[in-house]
Structures are given as structure tokens and as C-alpha cells.
Length: 292
Image (cartoon, rainbow, N blue to C red; front, side):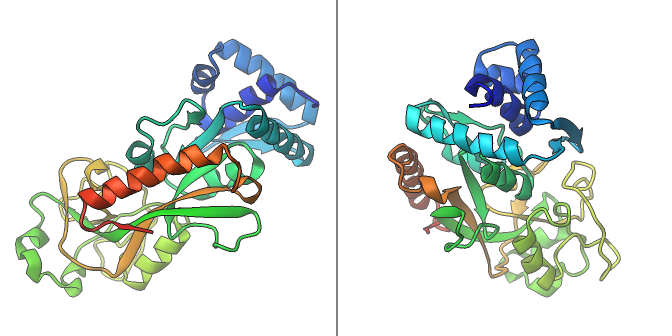
């Protein structure tokens, strides 16, 4: 190996978890040690980490670095070292309670899919609980998907919203006069396409116009706003929101993604057993949930 497992772990956990403090906490070391090791790895591979919009990017040619990452990833899987698990912002708490210490858990704060997928592809992380339908294809040559649960994707409204008074008589056309707020363009491409087909993606108060908005407390403070949501993330919206009794015909859900070469690895089996047991419990607890 060109660099030690600890040194590359410092580098990659900084990239993955975004701060030296979080990386140091997972590795039971000091932030100063993380900083030194990051510099050593950057120098060894002729690259430079640079933070942009809250994410660490690697400047320079990462070819040799990514080859080394794959060697270290194989070393983790085969030598019993802790593996790395990321999940979407709501699915981490949903599925990872009581998870074995065999897995290092991420911050569970991603609001898009491209970054965790890149980390999985590069070997920075080892597994990712992703959101359906924004998943690799089942026949993807690089990734294997283990499907867990599926449930409706709907619209939520803040308490006091006029649409809540309609109850079960609400129709899709009743939504037209109201703005919808979602995530940045491209954050969840397949969900975005489905919502755009219904004219429900980032729609401003002026009917028919579209704006680029982030899901922030500011953009959700409009008392007339609506937001795409499900039974598992509605409570995470700021304030008090309720799902509208409106069937959009859209489905969301959760699936575990790993590199295909580790899909049948014995160390994956306990994680899958834990996630599938949780999935069964969620199906039993919620009538809207189906096993995938």
C-alpha cells in the first residue's frame, strides 16, 4: 500500500463526513492528527482537497488515489475492519438504530444522491441506503441493489393550510394555486422528473413559472407552501406539517446499495438481516408500507 490504512481513512472520512471533527470522532484520534494525515495523503497522490458548497472535492488527477481506495476497501472487507455506511437524511435514523459497531455510520444529512453515489463508486464508503426511484438499475454493472420498502410519495401542507380543510375530497387540480418547494434541481433526478410531469417541482406563486429553491426553513415558511413528502420525512419539515390525503400515483422507498463485488460477501449478511427485519417491522406498523 502506498499509504497506511489509518492515513487514507483520515483523508476519506474528512471527504465523506465533511469536517475534521467528525472524522476524528469516528477514528478515535485528534483533529490535528487527521489534518496531518490528510496532508500526507494529498502529497503522496498529487491531489488537493478543496471545499465547495459544503462538500470536499479532490483537485488533481484522482486515478491513483481511487485505485488505492479500492485496495483499502478490499482490505477493510477481508480483514474485519469497520465498514462505512451512509444513508439519506431520514432513512439513517429509520433503519440504523441498534446497528452493529461493525459499521461506521455517516452523518445522515445528504439531501441529494450524486455525492453519496460518487463516494460509493470511489470506495470512500462501503454501503448506502438510497431513496427509490433514484437508484442504480438492477442490472447495473458496478452496483447491486437490495430493495427494502416502498410507500407513497405525496404532498404535505403546514397546519392551517386551506387545502387541509378539503379533507378526502381534495383533487390534484386543487393544488394548482399554491406554491411547492422541493430540493435543488438535479438533487433527485427521477423524483424531479415525476413531479415535473405533475407540475409540482419548485413552483412559485405565479402559476406555471419555476424557480430554483432549496428546502430551507426560509423557503418553507410560506403558510401557503406545499412540499413533497412521505410518512417518514413529513415530521422533519420545520414546524407542523401534515400529509394531504391526495394520491399522486408516485412511489418512494429505500434500498441498500453496495459495489457488486461485495454483494455476496459474508460481512454484508448481518447488515441485510438487520435492515430486512426493520423493513418487516415498518410494514407491520404502517399500512402504507410494502416490502420491496
